[in-house]
Length: 266
Image (tube, rainbow, N blue to C red; front, side):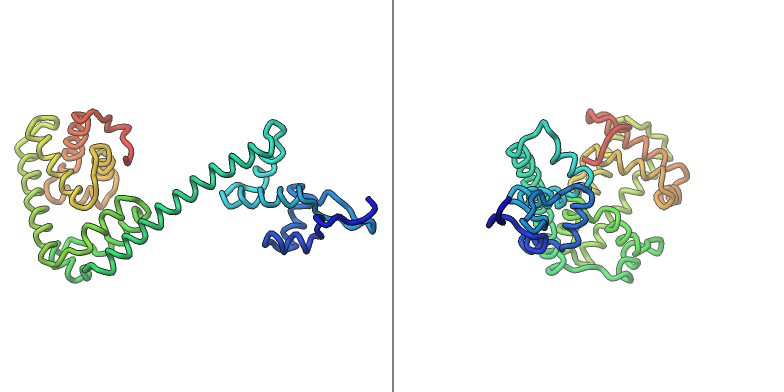
């Protein structure tokens, strides 16, 4: 070519335009992801408008979390044209934006709830729930479920509860546990009318905090027989209660038309 085109950019100019470092563009050049396709009369390699457009497409896919090698395969796919790439990128970005908006809304609700509500101190938790209660269970639950819709519901529904409210919750839980123990010792059969009623009471106790579906209840029941803390807790109330409650919940879940063995958190 006889003279540089106005749309041709050196690596420094291209880097400044797209907000990347020169080192990054050199790396992308080295791995064949985006290579400057033109040269000046002096032999310097420069980026054309098409090269810059490719850089922008790489940035979009990288933002979506794709590795560079996969991005290169997508962009070099001979079966897809530029417009198809753009439509794909737009659809993925729209989905990501929707997801991020949902996350922002959830964080806003949690902030509003925590700012206006009352949280129990560890001492109050032990006082209300008994000496077997471990205050660290709350943090463990948040670490495990903190990014779920159900944890957001829990925060919203409990942040305004007073210590007296929690004492009533503890009394309700104690009464439910007493009825479960009595039914277990009386040999109530899982799947019976009485057992299903108890299972529904147990599920309702969780629905106080979040919308607990039969499928979710089955998922919780699995932890009652697989996680030592739960096993020890229920069996301390009555030996064998953990397995019996698991069977009761599974039978009730099946009565709702959900296979408890394959139920998912939904």
